[in-house]
Length: 164
Image (cartoon, rainbow, N blue to C red):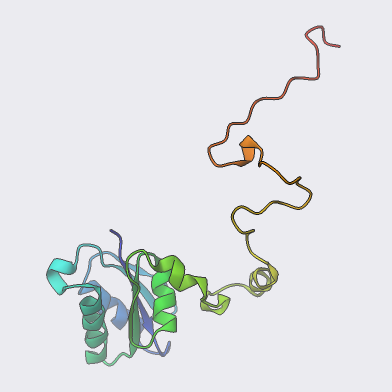
């Protein structure tokens, strides 16, 4: 099971390289995401540091010991861990399988987006609910090719074998 930890500096003026050293002291699988953000692969570290909450607290305490104030988020994905770190206070652990639920209500402002993309996404109504029909579709059964696992039959050619 993949578990990703996000270490997020609370004050970006603090030493990013020091935070990187804190992360590397706990795992060899570290990603420097820039701008005061480090991702750490926490998979398989339970035997060394305990569960996710204990690892996160240990990382927070190690950063504090070298003079850094950080937030720590643990989840199954980088986005989930980043949201947990940005929305939480101190240490936030998203239970396995809970990323979608925790991200469902997260604001778009959590992401670092260009202005045009942020504007476009904020105007989007999002995907249609499952089972809904696009406008103009008749009521009744959904065509087989539109259903998951449905097969699409090739249509007959309009051209005859004689080329006509």
